Amino acid sequence: MKKNLFELEEKRLKEEIQKRGAKRVLVQLPEGLRPDGPRLATIVEDAGAIAIVSGDPCYGACDLPICETQSLAVDLIVHYGHTRMMRDIETPLSVIYMEARSKVNVKAAVEKAVDRLQLWNKIGLLSTVQHIHALNKVKKILEGAGKTVYIGDAGNTKYPGQVLGCDYSNAKLIAGKVEAFLFVGGGRFHALGLSLATMKPTIVADPFEKTAYSIETDVQKILKRRWAEISRAKEAGNFGVLIGLKPGQRNLEVAVRIKEDLEKNWKKAVLLAMREITPTTLSQFPTLEAYVNTACPRVALDEPLVFTKPVLTVKEAYVMIGKMRWEDLLREGII
Image (cartoon, rainbow, N blue to C red; front, side):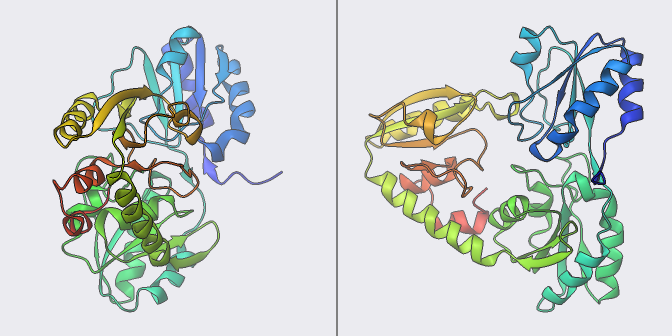
């Protein structure tokens, strides 16, 4: 059997259910933890509750299945892989956050990253919650290599140095002090967001693959693509302004303001509300020529989702209508 790479807190799961007297529990897992769903369901049932495992996508703590819990008469959500968002999200019932901390040793990947950081002395250090407990160890390794290390604590996340897919406030807080960032974690998603939010060189130390690499080439490709999308959107006359229906992505006031700004610049605009923003859902509105997304800013920026029509972030929309300069956007950060 494959060794579990994450701490899923099975004992705490059972204790919390019994302590709360929960009768029906919805377990929500990000993609990488889905294989553990049946085993966790068994633990829930051993605790005396009916277990339901959510099969829908889960992109973060902003993506709580509120509507599903109401229709399924669930009285407790167990949400794995993320921490509670610091800004309030209204929930009609209890939510337990299981952080799923990584059990993988970060040392080998970080030591390889030191070689990649030779050009810079002042380093910003960040990670997701899965490796946040290892940051002090990483800091000591970097300091042992003669680096000055900064870990931001903006207060928007539960932990200093923690980043979310849509929140890089800890990075922005120290961006003016550092020459480059080291991101500790698997995959490119959060590291790309970090670099796009700060426009600083970013090195990834991937503990799972025991590798280290730069994402600069990927960032440059994304920037070229975003400028091309802004240029395409300038030619459009009919816009859809997208409102996210997920609890942590709902920005109605921003959407209304964007709609008004577009109309002041001789564009037609309609507000569209949806839970999942995908090429398929947008293709159902053939008269619309471009979109402005006020939900998760990563929707338009990530390579896997290939939209046939321009989908801009709020900042990019302001560049398009001349309310913001591209150079200022780069200086401030795309996200």
